[in-house]
Length: 473
Image (cartoon, rainbow, N blue to C red; front, side, top):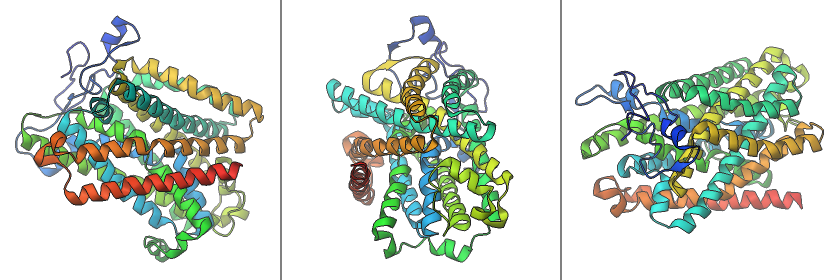
């Protein structure tokens, strides 16, 4: 449980106090972490006790799913979805649907692991491996988080360039300032952080709903795209389909969800209360991931409705921004307003990822190597490390956006390599009666589907990595 010195419940509605640990400040930047996952916010959000309506329970448990869903609509997903629509129309919507269903299953397992065992995925992996392997896995996961951070830096810098005309070098440097955002968030409580994330998701959703309405897609073709077709297996279509799958299921989301699912304060000694927490955590996750599915579909629909047949040169954020205000590319609906809204949504996406990336970094550091530091300090260190390679590439290529977008693609490739290291232990742990107990172990069908997903994603991502590397040679 959370000590009074580290966290304070502000009110009966479930709002929480400081996310930043005062104990860390008193003891220095680095201290030992042997307690619950993200101890400062663990069990700090109130939920109804006893009989309560479905709606009230769902509201109390809603929030963690939004932080997870952010990873499924970050800047790394945008190019693949819009390019998929521009090149192949509505064909690849079925790929987005399949990826989202897989994500729902894996995130359900991650939340259940945290709620039932009281351990996040990093803690569980360390407990069932050992110190040396734990350090290796921590390093690989940290690199994956930094790869995600690189995508956020690039997306944020390009958004600032498009909105305010700032040079990319300046934009890259300014992204370090988002540590100030984390300092603010550590003072307002986790429930309000969830609300901010949901608000930014609504901004992104509203922007693309508006752009799709303006684009006037052929809805019969949109819904037909939900059904898989053999054409997807053609080489060019398959390559982009693999890119969509690889950019959708991210390893850090599994660590994050297994931790923040534990923020709700329920009776962990009562199996019925645990079952209720699993149930509503799953509802929260599936609803928010459905929102992410809609956003990714909207991205692809915008690409298909506006740019299908005119996709040449639409391979960077800047080119998409300019195309949205160019009647020769986007047709009669093109306008500066559409382009500006696109850049605003890109900036919102990057800021959302900043919040979740910092929380995930804390989870894996505490879980794998039992070390913790204040979130603002960790964020400053990881952001500076992530900014350095982006800054080097920006300077070397004289602010060429194509170079930055290529770097973003390569960061997604590294995430593909790290993915099996999180999926395989997740399926193993949640399929173990010894770890989960008779009541909460995965049913056989879920275990079978989980292993099929783990193997398929590993193979598909390996193929994506191979294709990317072969293209560089």
